[in-house]
Amino acid sequence: MSGDNQASRLSFFEAAWVVARRDFKAILFSRAFFFFLLGPLFPIIVGGLAGGIGGQVQRDAIVNSVALAMADADNEALLAARQTARETVDGLPQLVVIEPAVRNAADFSPEALLRTSNYAVVVTGTLEQPELTGTHLQIHRWDGPVSLLSAMATGATPTSYPKVTENILETTAAAAKSNRIRTAQAGQLLLFLLMMLLAGMVLSNLVEEKANKVIEVLAAAIPMDSVFFGKLFAMLGVSFVGIAVWGLFGAGIGALAGEAMPTLPEPALGWPLFILLGIAYFAMGYLILGSLFLTIGGMATTVREVQTLSMPVTMAQLLVFFLAAYSMTSPGSPLELTAAIFPLSSPFAMLARAAQSAELWPHLLALAWQALCVAIFVKAGATLFRRRVMKSGKGGRGVKGRVGSTTPGDPA
Image (cartoon, rainbow, N blue to C red):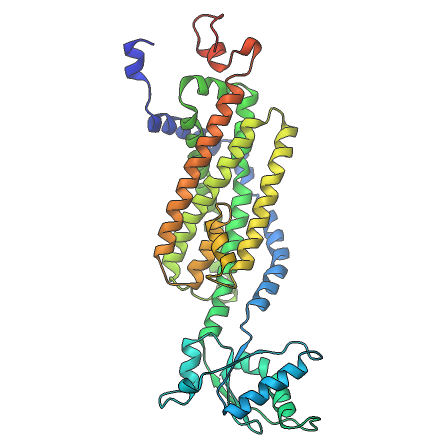
């Protein structure tokens, strides 16, 4: 290569920008993109079906720990009654005895305990006159089991059940956690639907350019890493355009519906930061999944091979979504940490954490880790594509031998 050609060769980022700008304009101003914008009508049906699963997760996420702050003898009697009844009665709460030093303190109150601890209700009073402190929903959920256990604790064969006194609070830490899980579920479901709907564009674009040999010309002219990065970010830009259009339609529907639209509890980090993190996690999740689809497109030679090779990734994405959805009910557990670290499930798990926890530093760490995974996946995919495609052809000549070489007989 001459000195002039070396001086005029594009850098990595310049080449990636050229590819991104070309793909972005070609897709955005095509007729097919207009029809693509109608695609979310179908995921709405899927979202409605997934609501049943979400409802089950919401029911499982409701806190079922009941704190006992009665006298020591009454606490022990309730524990013994639960041990006896658990073999024949389903749906009994988990009974947690509050330490004597805590419940006998001068400043102890059930209200303060519920605002700082993750209990459904607090039981005080006596076995003959139990008193439940908690939200209206939680009290009416557990007053029956507590009355049953109190009756069993006072007699072997109870004939009457004590009346439970209710001390209703507006909200508790457990109720706030249960409400925020609804926001986490909605965020995860929206993120999953958008990624699965939009990531397929990356695969179809690469397969089409492989069929008409455009990708081979690009591979001979600029580094393959730049081609992959350019295509990924072009598709990400097109995706944001589509999301903006759908968001405007959604805002219009919300304005017409007014107060009839359902509302979600405010996430722990607040709506502005939660939405900002949602955009960042969508971008990272899209780039991770898109890099895998680019690798699949590089390995496949026919449309049938594309469908066969992409199916495991699609199923894996569905599995990791369910993993992240299940792990959100136990923040800080090994399962939740695994979902937050694994690249495919990390965006879903961390978005759920943003709804439930006010800590910001884990998100900065997660975004840096996801960006590193994108770079690794793109590098690995570009290397695999270069080895498979650029070395294809007769006599071992690859793309360089067929496109970029000045002498037809030169080896690749």
